[in-house]
Length: 170
Image (cartoon, rainbow, N blue to C red):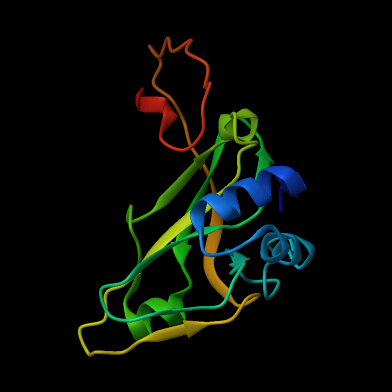
């Protein structure tokens, strides 16, 4: 198998800023403890395609509720790859846990963005059966899969990324 990427933690200061911006009810001590507990995504088995992302805090989502999780993770990858992020299969199957943007696409140049390429994952419990989902800090809730892609023969893009999430359309 070809090795094309490397996960890293964002800096402590970037994580604390993003965690406290995302969760205004949390203080710097909560954010520091969450940062200290971060682990890089790993595959569960040799046959797994997905690298598991873990929650940085405890939460419960009732049907229809949404949460945005700052993962504390960034990824450096080859230019001809992207990282696609999906909910973990079991959570999707049992609770209809869904990504708010259907599939998260992390571009290779996101690594160099203003927010250090900090990956955020926004999910919704779309249960039609009234089921709430509860996850603890450290529980795997999403999975990232590296995918190779090509470009057209006449592609002449020269624009460079200069921002974080959603910046390529600005």
